Image 1 (cartoon, rainbow, N blue to C red):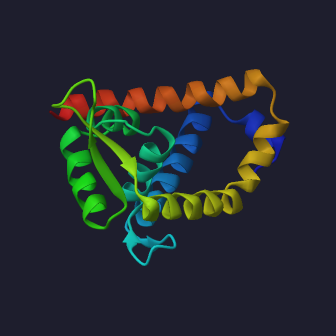
Image 2 (tube, rainbow, N blue to C red):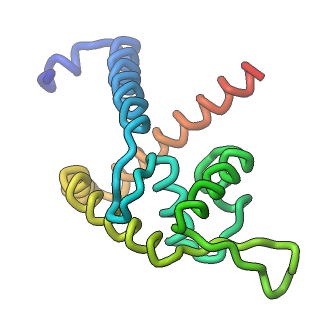
Length: 164
């Protein structure tokens, strides 16, 4: 790690590049992680994208494909494919909206609830260090972190839009 003095003596440009390098390392490691399915207590191997979709459904019962796509920042097509897999594994149920017969809402099945509970326990264990650090931060510091994440997301959105 760098000392406070080392960081203070770097130019803003150097600081930016170090932060970007750290972000790239994080992204590379996260990309490795998303390739590894896990069993969350149901006997099925679930990829992180499947588990995150289950999490959104579990925390927002009755959500639809569009809502999940917006929440996760992915396409409706990607969500539809994941929903098909999760339904095939008996983890979610599709139900008709009583107010709109054309609308399909999603809820967790018993196995889906088991997977979500296991996933929550997994994150309690692995996120403890980050949560402890966040508890020590004041609201302004947390707002700054949130703002940086938002800026990073917007930067990636602009980059993706430029590729289209």
